[in-house]
Amino acid sequence: MKLSFTKMHGCGNHYIYFNCFDQTVPEPEALSVRLSEAHFGIGGDGIILISPSDKADAQMRIFNADGSEGKMCGNGIRCVGKYLYDNGMVRGRTEITVDTLSGVKTLALTVSGGKMETARVDMGAAILAPRDIPVDLDGGAVIGAPLVVDEKVYHITCVSMGNPHCVVFMDEDIDGLDLTRIGPKFERHSLFPERVNTEFVNALPDGSLKMRVWERGSGETWACGTGACAVGVAACLTGRAEKGKEITVHLRGGDLTVQYTDKTVYMTGAATTVFEGEIEI
Image: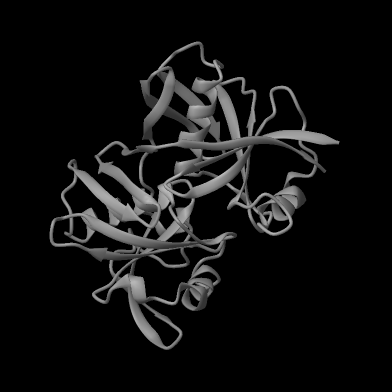
């Protein structure tokens, strides 16, 4: 059986995309594990299926590199928007909707030369109630709370953007962190019943934020859109940024812009098509 695919990335967060309007992808959990491996597959952070939806222009389903299904991916949804626009599937409209396991999201596309370049995504309201993130703590929100990991005390701020995030602001340069060692210990900490994505962040003098991310199911990735949103929210909650203003978040693969408002969180960034192909499975 042959499947057509498109390799795309948002700030280096790279997935393998399958158009399921005209083909069926069997056993996506196992396929994601196989294809995400660079030496024996295509290489990526997982696969994303673009399928018909009865309540949006398309539905996206995300499968991480370990085969687990994710609820939302901020970089992935921009790539889905680009795929739909560039392939004529939304008839030239620059405001489109995508159905996810975290609800229907609206994208405002910026277009040049008939191709989508960037998208501003309405990511929905930030969720702060611990039990809804979920985090196994009581109270109204987890802001700067101490957590011992590997015999060291970290201060965490927890946010859900449709998936759970633990934000850790640090004084030491995050470039020197051994994420392959510390990342899994956060991901599988008993405080997080559904595991967690963890962002390690430096607040820079110019007001921007630099982050590295360990994603549950994928390990360290070059970017995480929902993670950048969580970082922007956490910065406002801890007094490192101002609510309502645009915040630049520097990731390993590029920059995203985040704006946290009373009603929602907006994320703006680029999306890039790398190549198209066909694979025998």
